[in-house]
Length: 475
Image 1 (cartoon, rainbow, N blue to C red):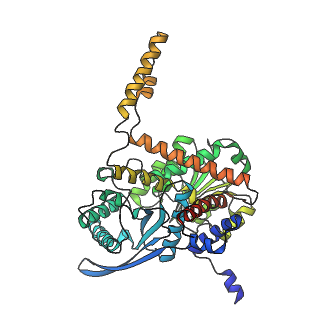
Image 2: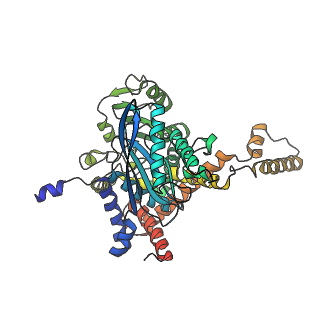
Image 3: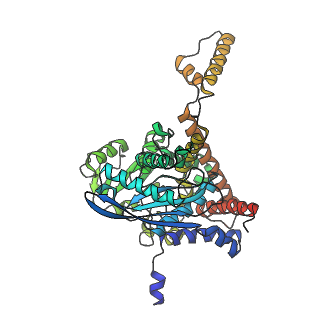
């Protein structure tokens, strides 16, 4: 009986709690304060009917709010056939800590709908989404200033546009209705750069890691990013953009890409865009000419490589396969891909793990930018772009006058061009990810009680959250 309990797998939520508790011990936080920080503030479960193809179908959805210490509470809505309350609560908690780490002034929340989107048409998904939105609004779980969702697995710009439009019809007097959700199409209040934000954030994390010579040396690695061998699991929105940017802009060689039905390998490197195009057309990696397909997807995680990027589901590296992981650096682009027990094994093997609670924060950072844009009712760059161009021209004219030489046209264009919205979004995202990495690394380096990046990240988050609670007089 005791052995069965010992071998019982931890749930996703329990894995997150154990990792947070490790940081709590470092900070020596008293049990009451720890409980206040870890507790999920509220959880809503809704069941609602929708008439599909002449038949009534019942759907179940959840929305968890982990923390209200900052408002609004922020977090995506996922549509998947495996969604459950435990998962939603765990993801809501991660959002709270994630926002604190990257200094985004949001509380954490998450939502999910138990559904397989592939089984429904576009019009049917719209019906379901609008009804789910109605249920959230009725219970006070959707508002520009209180509860703001975003895309997640199984959802995207389309679903966010439906949610915003439904909210607008329910609250026609709210001029800030577009801010009730982020990740919308640009034409409907979205912001450029949001679609690829999480993947772009992963790229910025890896870039910053390899800029830091002490971090690279500490991981038992050397050199820069160019020609580093990488394996990525998942080629959805996050995985695709992370792999595309790292391969095309940083020279990373992806020797294996893993999907649900198998893996593609190529020791000379895989063209990520070509593989993505193949998947869009065939919905499988089978038959891809740029590599060798194998149904054994799990073994891809165990390949010898420099970087392993899990960008799919949680609990992919567990106590069962952690001993066989050969990567020197794991970059958690997915939420919870490494379990608590596996994390301990990997640390003993001196594998460096950049944690999900920091690595995939790019989405919420750019969501923050979109939310601010919606509330201010003006796109970024509108007021200063032409001024920057005029100032740049003045500098060039002065330079040409003083030197008597003409500046090359390609150089002139770079100097004169004012920053547009996408430039500013990328700049803000890069700055946020860099600052957070340096804070995490400094915490890890300077505190002998902390042995890994994950604990350092949670220590930073808990310090900020507890300070907010103390200042507000919550305890």
